[in-house]
Amino acid sequence: MNKQNNGIGTLQEKSLHAALKSWYARPGDALEVPVSGYHIDIVRDTWLVEIQTANFTALKTKLKALLPDYKVRIVHPIALERWIQRVSEDNKFITRRKSPKQGRIEEVFTELVRLPDLACHPNFYLEVLFIKEEVVWRDDGQGSWRRKGWSVADRRLIEVIDAIQFDKPERYAALLPSDLLRPFTNLELSEHLGLRRSLAEKMTYCLRKMALIDLVGKQGRNNLYSESKV
Image (tube, rainbow, N blue to C red; front, side):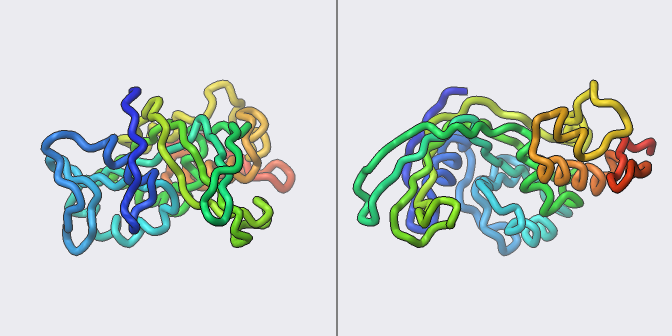
């Protein structure tokens, strides 16, 4: 999957969103279509396709309205490789470096935690795109303290590397490692997968809401989880 697109979006559309929409679209697709009072990125046959680079919370109302009558495919990118470009307040290039951070599929739960009940709907389909991206930091003093005031001015697509489809809830449960002893705690899950504890907690929260795992007991103060028997 090596089709590349570095297109820049409109004033209302960030570069990454615009580039992924262009990458994903095929001949015959309808773009920017109103459906039941909502703006849809791509309509393909009987599918409504939404490119969502972040903030699944913004999708909740739309999904609740559309899922009873339409099949909805959410396309979400995770960056396996990220480059940081720093620019001045007036957008002049300063530096460019490769970030040491590498994305991984479990990060999808950072967004799914906002709507795990909807992710189980039979008309809900999630496609995760593994990408290379460039993130533009602007030295305007308006950004996060973690970036020492640098703002994220834009995200740009470099390349789409691969894709993983989640067409049924069981696909999410398959992300639990088969060699992890059951029952398990969030700490054991995080250590086994090399995840942050907070991400492991989001993962088990989502899988519980999807009725894919159950809370089966306690180990001290820690909850114990195992696959659902139902």
